[in-house]
Every structure is written in C-alpha cells, then in structure tokens.
Image (cartoon, rainbow, N blue to C red; front, top):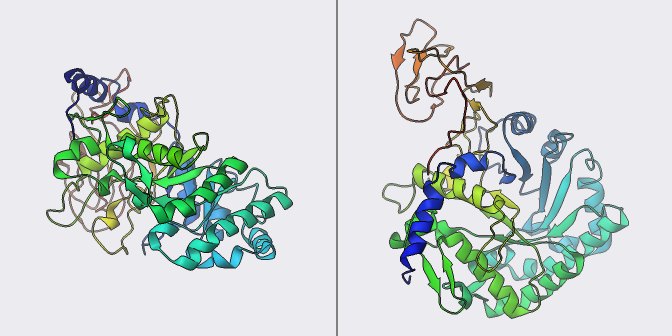
Length: 434
C-alpha cells in the first residue's frame, strides 16, 4: 500500500480514539444479522425473536432458507426477515407457476404479520460455479418479482448476494472490475436491479483480503492507509476500499451508479486455529464494532459519500457444527444469549448472563461495594469472568474475585446483577474504546 499524507494518520487516530467511541455510537444504530442454524445447541426461534426484540437494537435478520418456524416466531416483532431460496431450488423457480406456488407456500402464510423484506435467489451462486444454477438465477429473480406483484406484495424485493470473488481487481479501488465471465452474468442482473429499484447485494469480507502488514487497515485501527492516485482518494480501512472497488466495477460495466448496494454479509471470527493470522476477539470487536458505526454514520465511502448502507453482520450465533474453528466463531452471541463481545447492539444498561436468557440491568454500587449475585443448579463448572466484580455463588460456593471482560457460560444459571462498581451513580456514555 502507498503511504498517505501524515495528516490522514492523525485524522484516523482522532476518529478511532475519540471519547464517543465506535461501540458507544453503535448502540443506537440500525443493524441486521445473519441467523444461521449450523449448530445443535441453538435456542428455539421464539426465544431468539423475543431476545432480539427486547434486549437488542437489531432490527432485521437474514436466514438462509424460508424456515416457517423462524417466520412464525418473528411475527409482530417489528424485526424484518430476509428469506433465501436454496441454490439447488433456483432452477425450479424460473417458471411463473412454480414461483407463484413458492410465494403461496413460503410468504403468504406469514406476511404481513412477519415483515418479509427480501427474497434472495440463491447465495453466492457465481462463487459456487454451478452453471445450471447461475443460468437460472436471473430468470428465477424475474419470475419471483412478477409473482410478488401478482400477489400484491410490492413491498418485498428480490435480489441475490454475491461474494467478492467476482472482482478481477480491487486494489486500489480505481482498478475495480468484474471478471470477464462474471461481468456477462452481472450486467443483466444489474439491469434488473436498475429497472425494479432493488438492491445489488454483496458480501465484503476484509478478513479474507488482509495481509499481515494490512491487519490494522482491515480492522479499522490506526494505519498508514491507502492513496488511490487515479481518484485522489485516501482510504483508512479495507471495507471502504472493497465497497468502492465494487462501485467502480459497476460503473465500468454500465450506468449503474444509482443502484443501491446492500451488505448481505460481513464479519470477523473471534477465535480460530492456533496461529491462524488475524483471528482474535480483539480484532473481531474492532472490525464489527466499527462496521456497525461506519455504515450508520452517513459518511459513506470516498467514492460514495453521504450514504448509509443496509448491513447484515455475520453472524448472530456461534455455530458449533461448522467445519473449522474460525467458521464456528463468527457469532456475536453464544447459544445461551451471552455476548461473545458487544458491538453496541445491546440496549442501554443491559447484558445477558443466563442460559435462560434472563436480562440483567446495571445498577451503580454503593461506595466500596462490588456485588454480582449468581446461582448454580449444582456443581461449579468453571470461573465466571467479569472484571472488577465479585460473584456470590449458590450451592455453598464461596464468593470470589474474578477477572477479564465477559461472563463465560460455565454455570447452569447466572441470574441477576445487583450492582456494578463500574456503573457510575450519575450515568453517562461509557463506550468501549476500540
């Protein structure tokens, strides 16, 4: 990467280390999450819906099918749902009668009680390179769009998400262009989006694009940045670089600057295999926390200024049946609803400490006291970790001091926080510095 002027580094430091930090600012932001099911220990959808509605600011979810249990659970929550047609089912929906039947079976029984925002036709079909699925993706998009209008469901929009492997070049962003084969597929898809006013959905993952020397750039920490000579734009993070590379590729392909771009997936794993580069809770918090802030800020990117981007973080939960350690650790939450880390989506004054998902509310401690009450249903299973707090345990276990930043779900039940010495008697914003 080329060096940027010195003032840019100081500007980046000011933004990232200001008192109103990324996490504090994110608390009131609008954000979506990808809700996957590759796990054998997830709570029922009804509990998930109640948790998101009551205790977080997450206002939309995206699922990778049209699971009726999820659609039923999110009725009347105010949380919108994006559903997905599995890649294998895409060819069958290229005919209008089949598309109408799919709408009748998967949408009409639930909408509008459940707000269904998008129908996604396949997932990263260009990445998976199944020529049959690729050939039928746009026809299925068209027939589903037509079927929705025939059913008078004009508020539901149709799209398909793309991996960034469709880019032949992206650094610097001015070199952005689609691969030749993919461009031939994407041009008519972008024409569809332009005509129907539906979004072009992309899955940017700086995690898959960073090098050891660009890690800080990828996770929004102070860095030397990137200067694009062709556009004379400075870049302080890889997320903006990838988004502007997509924008340039769209512009080179045709007059598509007016097509909305939605971020269908982005994320960073909090744990991985030993010595896996860049994988840590600290990096996950830095990336996801700053993405939530950034996409809501209205700042946009250097080539798309003054814009917000509808965004879905990957993922809602850690999913224990996925293949690798890092793939199992993209979640914002553990299956017991305790945060892996908090990017600012918890409502003010709340966190999760129990397997049953009981909310706790922070209370200021009287001077000199620092107490958390917890109960166990049996034997001690490990050490609850919470910096600056004392835990009172049931079943005759003694109170003890504990350390680190998060509760670990090693008790059968952690109930209610009585007080927290770090909550000031006169509440004020105390965002976590990234």
